[in-house]
Image (cartoon, rainbow over all chains, first blue to last red; front, side):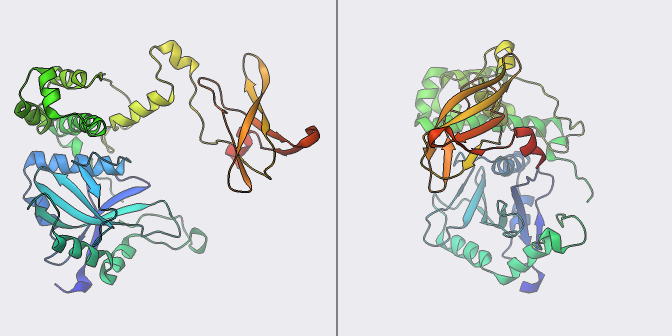
Amino acid sequence: MSQGQIKFRLFGQIRQGADRKIGVLTGTSDLNITDGIKILAVNQKRELKTNLERWIDGHTGPKSRFHNFEGDSIAPMAFVFKAYNHRFYGYRTNPLPNTAPRLQVIVLCSHAIKPGYETSPDEKRFIKRMAESIEAARALSESFDDTPKDTKKGPRQWNQ
Amino acid sequence: MESVAHWTQNSTADFIHSISSNFVAQIETKIEEEGISQNEIASKMNKTSGRVSQLLNNPGNLSIRVMVELARSLGMKVSIIAYDDKDPNNDQGPIDPEVFVRSWEKLDRPVDLFEVEEAVLPVDEMPMVTYNVGYEHADVFRQDFTYGYVCYSAPIRFLPNPSVELLNMYPAKTKPPTQVQIYGPGGLMINQTPLLSERKAA
């Protein structure tokens, strides 16, 4: 698939918050979150959704559930959610810096079955590439309209 | 947008997993914060470390007995509560237990319903008076239903110019102030915050 087909959608069936949201990038074979979710066992899916909602609700841990990569030399914007031996990687961004400066969105990009204790540098480089990708930014901007309220005709709405 | 049911609405087992897993996360957080080893917990629970690990990794199967044993091994307690969050269709899923814990802590950990009645949550509108620095106290007025309009003096802390922050505004279990007046040298009032009701309306 070409880069132009990258799409963003909010993660379904979980509680999305006003200040924190989680979504998924799809459209290329590298963006394998959907495939990763498909192979999860029932309890693993439950654990993933619980952990996604914990972050949305404002938790910062425990690290056994999710954590950021603050201070990482390759991808300080990266974030990982865990569900047993599965890892769902993404990056944290704010697609509405003008109209919702407090908003944090985690954009999930990559799934891996835990290869070792440390996240591989290749994984982190991929996350960094997606965080800086113009196509990913375009996909996000299609879901989040950052036009200030007073320049639009109607009330602001999330375009999901 | 079409409403999509929350995942915990799919089955009771989903709902149980969500609340049990959040309980385990509370336990894991305590373990992380206090640097307690799994062996110590196992020893207090009279179980092997492997068994404790198994319990923590399978939250959907936790019994109330095991939940209590886990919490007690860390000096914690467990309460089971039912609540009405005005979401009868469960579109939003269960409320995170930490919301209840932090609300309770904000009320100064009341132990019975009388203490809950006496306690009042601090309001968001913490009066942050932005005025010139150089004064050492503020007179804080509080509407009190029993005693009428009461006033007490509160020290202020100087923040980066030109803000000052009122300290000790909310002694435990008192109502928030309704009006704050800042006095300068010679008793001259130099700033007065609007009443809370006016601020809310604004």
